[in-house]
Length: 166
Image 1 (tube, helix red, strand yellow):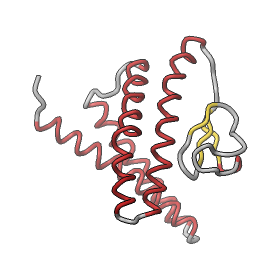
Image 2: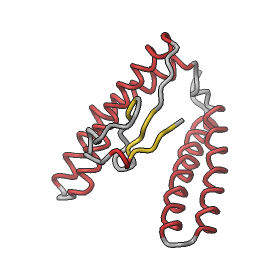
Image 3: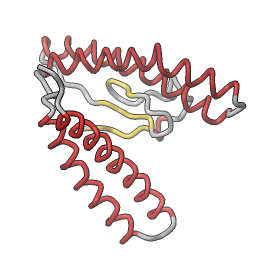
């Protein structure tokens, strides 16, 4: 079955809504820091609405499959990004003399490779019916399985910089 224009439009709409969701969360963080809690709430509320739209488009695209298929797809995506996409971004940022971007890309690449391992481990967790908690480094995005480490293996952030995800 060939892809229709509606399928292409759903992909474009999903990308736009997902980006808006995250962009607005970034705006909310800034508004909080600048002392505008009401504006931060507005940004978070509209971000939540954009998430509703994005998930609706995602479902219509039938991208979400069984949990095992989603784990495999997520693993493959993380590997592709960490092994193929970020290395090129790092190289270009280095050539451009963009040290901050180079560091950000490097940390993201390293975090993505850890994410891939987590997806692989998750299948074992399912089989063992093991429950775990995850800790996310708020500096670089590294995800740790279990209690937060004393120091992030990707960026060196301290334990206090980790957020627990339940």
